Length: 77
Image (cartoon, rainbow, N blue to C red; front, side, top):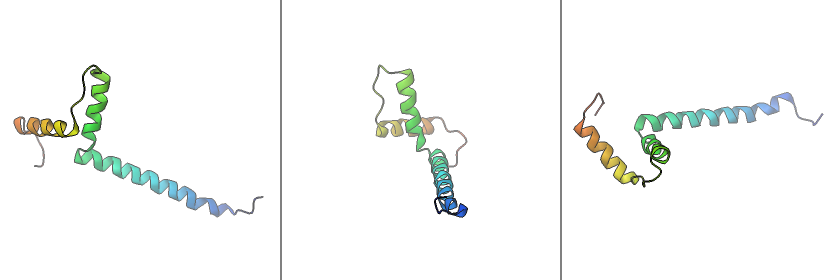
């Protein structure tokens, strides 16, 4: 025996569970707000077009907004 009681391990497990939940909430929020779009674009460019440099984040968002304005679809704003 190490002198630890069985209930002493629960705070660590609870902390890990809270951290996992927080990461899930952040992942969801980034998806809803569109923040993850640029990361997805970079991953696609690296995979599909490794020979050309990707757009900067600023260029990506300008292009994204121009595309949305030219092709309005079902969106809130």
